[in-house]
Length: 495
Image: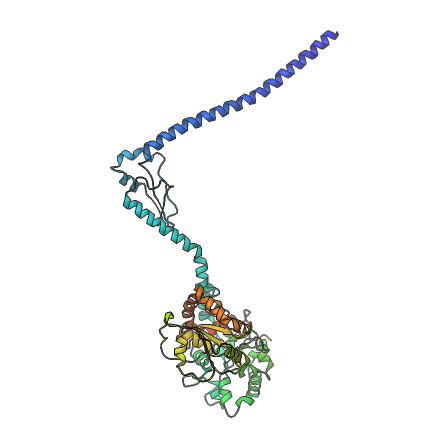
C-alpha cells in the first residue's frame, strides 16, 4: 500500500515537472527562432541596399525646391531609379527628378552635390546662402514689424475707421447768422491762424462734413459749438466772463431742447485748444464731469480732465506749404529746444544743458530760423510750460524730428490709436540730467533711425487741411469721438 502510494506520488510529480519544463522550453525556443529570423532578414536586406547604393550613387541625387504655395506634392516612385537608362545623361535625369516645392534648394545631406556640374553646385550654394538669410530675417520679422507699426492695432483701427466714416452722426445745436454771438458760435469765415488754430479748424471741417445730421434722432453725439478762443477775445465776455457764458449757454440748451436731459450731457461734447477751456467749465459742473471735453490741455494730473472720457486735441500750428524734404544725415545736433522759460521744468532744462555742445537749449529769441533748427536736430524737446501742451510736438513731427516728451501726466493726442513709444521718446521730468545719455544710446543702437522713420509715417495724422484729407487731424479727432460715443442707443422719449 505504501509502495503503491509512493509510486503514485512520484509519477504524478515527475509528469508535472515534465509538463512545466516543456511549456517553459516552447516560448524560449520561439524567441530564439524569431531573433535568428530578424538577423537573417537584416543581413539580407543590407546586402541588397548596399548593392543598390553602389550601383546608383552617382546617378540619382534629387534636389528639392520648397514652394509654400504648392503644399501638395508627389514624391517619385521608389522604383523610379530603375528607369535611369531612359535618360540621355545625368543632367536630364536630375532635371526630371527635381521637385518644385519652393524657392529654396534643400540638399539631401552632405553628398547632395554629387552629380552636379560646377555651375549647378555654385548656384545651389548661392541659393542655400539666400535661404539662410531669409530664415534669419523671418526670425526677426515679428520684432521688426512690431517696431515699425505705429498703431496699437492697425487692423482694428482701419476696420473701425471705415465704420465711423459710414455711420457716425453728429447733431450741432443750430444758431443763426444774426445771433448776437454768431462770431462765437459759428465757424470763422477766414482761415484759422495762431497757436490755437486747431479749435477753429475742427469746427470749420465738421460743419461741412458728412458726419453732420439735421435729425437729432439719429445722432450719436451732440456738439456745443461755442469757441473758447473767440470768447477769450470778445470784449463783451473776455477771460473773466467765460465761465458765466458757458453756464448760461448750457442752461439754455437744457431748457430749450430735450437731448441733454436724457444722459445729463454724457453724449455732448465741446472743443477747446486754449488752456482756459478746461477751467471755463467751473460753473457748469455737468459739462466738466459728464460731457466729452476735447481739449489741447489734456493733463490728467489736474481735476476736470478724465482720460477715458475726454480726448486730447493736437495743438498744431497751421501750415499751407508742402511738407519739407527730410534728410536724416544732415541732422548734426543731438537735441534742440527753444521757448520761454515759463516753468520750473524749463528753467531746469536750460540750466542743465545751456553750455552743452550736443544738446542746444535756448530761451528768448532765436538768432537762426526756427525751422532750420528743427531740420538740423535728431531729437526735439517738448517741455512742459504753463501747460503740458504746446505746438512743439506738431512742429517736430512736421520737420521730421523725433519728439522727446518731458511733461508728466500728458494724455498725448490720439493715444487710443497711436503707440507713441514707436515714434517718440517719453521721459520723466526727473530724467533731465540723464537726457544726453538716453538719447545717445538710441543713436548708437540704431533705434533713432527706426523712430525717425516712424515719425514720417505719423506726421500726416498731425496736419489740418481745408477741406480735410483722410486720416488727417480732423478725421483722427472724429475717430476719438467715435470711440467715446455711447454703445447703447437712447430714444428721444427716454428720460
